[in-house]
Length: 462
View 1 (spheres, rainbow, N blue to C red):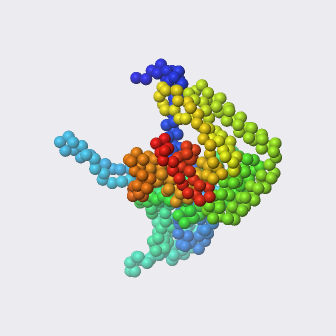
View 2 (tube, one colour; view 1 turned 60 degrees about the horizontal axis):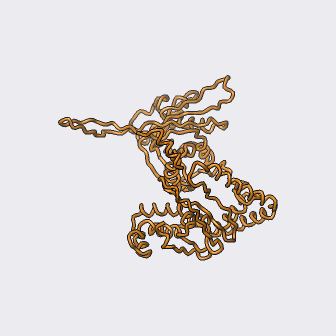
View 3 (spheres, one colour; view 1 turned 120 degrees about the horizontal axis):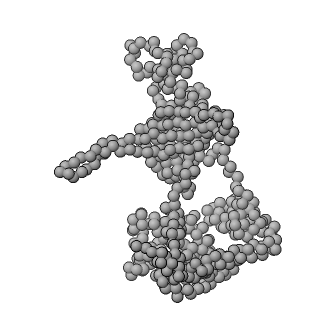
């Protein structure tokens, strides 16, 4: 059973007493944030209706705005009916049916009555009471579709209740698709053949001076279809196409950037954006980014640049001071490099979680940034070039598998090309997350001009 003395002993040995941050880092950050939880506010709901049934139906703009007025939405829930079977006291459970629980969708009650107009059309399409009230003659009977009714049937229809003028028995509400957004991708849940079970307007209150009105509808459906993909105009029509600010942020290079060296929109960020656009063939974007970066660099004062560099170094020293006494080797991983010149990167040699604190050697590597891509440049290249990503993934596979099996690099490349798609996906993710460290350690080198990749076999086991 753990004791308080064990906790204190860990601190006395120079090791951190609590290591939960390492668990969180390995779980949520590794593999390009693959297991990071999705965020609740990143969603989009698309309500598909058949506006051809109405003379004054929604125009495309109003249809998109209805989707954007969704305030909150429940995700589908399922209930399984299980039957317990017993044979000689051996129990087995058999599923006999599935229940699709209704979902609640809450809308903002907007000034243009976009949501109320949606409900009014659904209400009058399915319920004849409000249409008949105040109408004269056979307003309902004359418009009721009888294409599928017996031709000999009496056409003197009741004008109340569910006796409605449905055209060809088609539903007005076609489907509802809920998109969960994450890292420029989506996971969608489509409610098939939805039917509104209830619709509730909000409560008004003179004492509530800060409240806003909303409408809540409960939807029943027949089944759910799942899908996933990349956020684009084809799979998500209407998303980010209306009432969105598409102007680049002033903190970015395309929004004119900032007069600084580091940070968003700074000179370093601008150079990276230009190189990325050149690799992607976006020449116009590269020219614009280069122009803004050049103008910002001209406006930069020597005094401000010195203060920025001094502040960066001071921040790094403070980080070392914060960690001193809590870890066995307080050496922060920070360095200041100059573009176009050889940079020196200092880092602490990693320690394992044991009682041995003798291994605190600091390694200094001289990096040739003139002929080779830096760690950050290599990361940007892999993020935009699938061919280079696969090559680096194959070299990581050699590092983890091939070199330990006695294979040559060529043999390991063949084995990687014949591996399962799941294995390839794992090593492609590792290529993105580990490339900076592999470049820093000298295991992989990427030529700046040709983008050829070389491997240091001697460091394959590091």
